[in-house]
Amino acid sequence: MIAAAACSLSGCMSYGETVIYQLYQTNADRCVQNETDACVAMLQSSCEAPARVCTDYVPQFQTQASRQLSQKCRASDEASCRALDTVACDNGDSAVCARLGVEYAKLYASCKAGDASECESLSLSVWPKTQTDLAINACKNGDAIACRVASSSASAMKVNVDRNAQFAMF
Image (cartoon, rainbow, N blue to C red; front, side, top):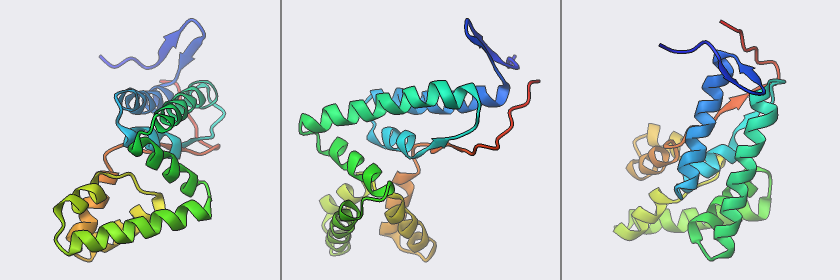
């Protein structure tokens, strides 16, 4: 049986809020297990509704993800550093975006030339939304390399809840 609301000592969440919470919790769990794509998905998500899930829980999840990536990046974890760069680019850092665009182009060219390790790096890396969108469009046009990038970037769920969202109680 599915409960209509999730309750704790601080109150109840509607079914809709509970679903949003569970999506964030899934990404948070994956992030803690060193899946950088889940950390990035959480940091790329937005939750702006005046609901407890957005005001109390989501900021905690995002802070935890950012802290984890920062700590791992300082410890020279390349994937975590790239994840932070991806978020910086998505937040408008044009210098980081330009650097990631050049890196993507180099990996893509090497992959297209037959370098299997570069294909693997390209598809396993986390890319900014602009690169991911380009890959999705190129995939629709039959680009197999771009399809690998598009597929891998879709493995974590990005959640966006606008400020006008309504969560009915059932």
